[in-house]
Image (cartoon, rainbow, N blue to C red; front, side, top):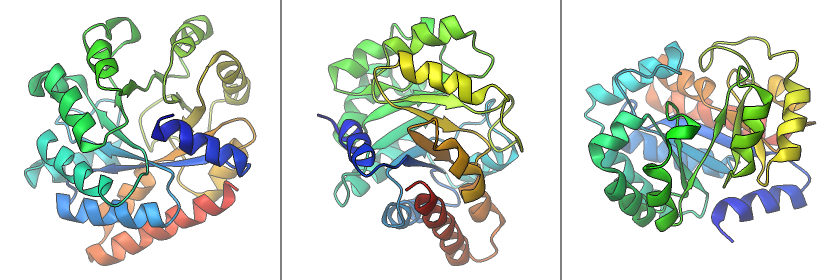
Length: 264
C-alpha cells in the first residue's frame, strides 16, 4: 500500500475529507517553500502538491501566475524542487504530488524525471495540460517507478469521457469545481454534487475537489460528496501579498489549520 492509499484510508477511518494543499515552489525562494510546507504539514495538510513554476501557466489565475513569476525570478528549477522534496521526505511521510505542465517534464526528460521523482520521495504527478489520450509516453515511465498520474477532470468534460478517464485512475482523481482558472471562481458549478457522485461511483480511487476553495466556509459543504479538498491560490495569496514573509507563512498555516478542522 502506497502513501496515498494509506492517507485516504486513514482519513476515511477518521470520517473526514483529506486536505490537499498546493504551494508554488520557489516563491519567494525554495528555502522559504520548504519551511512553509513543513509548517503546513504540521497544521493538518494530508497531501501536498509541489507546484513547479512555469512561464505560461494557462490553467492558473493571477495568484498562481504571480507566484510562478516570482519563483522563476528566484531561479527555481525542477531539479531544485526535487531536491527540496527529498529534504521534506526525510522528515515526513506525507504524500507529495508534483504539479507541473508537460513542457517542463519534456525538457527535463520523461524517464529521468520519473526516476529522480521516485528517488526524491514523490508519489505522483499531476500534469495540467496533458490530455488523457496523450499519456502514452509518460505513464509507462511513471508505472516503472511506482508513481501515479493524477487525472484532472474539468466541469466541461463530457460525463462519459470523464468516467472513462477515472476508471483507470491511480492515487486520486482531481475534479475541478468550476469553469475557469485557479482561484478565479466565487461559486461552484450547479451540477457539481451530481457530477462528483457519478465520478466517485465510477472511480477506483478517491475523488477530490479543487479550484476556488479559499476558506473553511467554502470547504465544508463539499465534504458531503467528496473525498478531499484542494486549496492552493488562497495559500499563495498569503505569501504573495505579505510584506513580512514570516507573517505570510503564519497566515498560510493558520488558514490550513482552519480548513483542516472543518473537514473532520
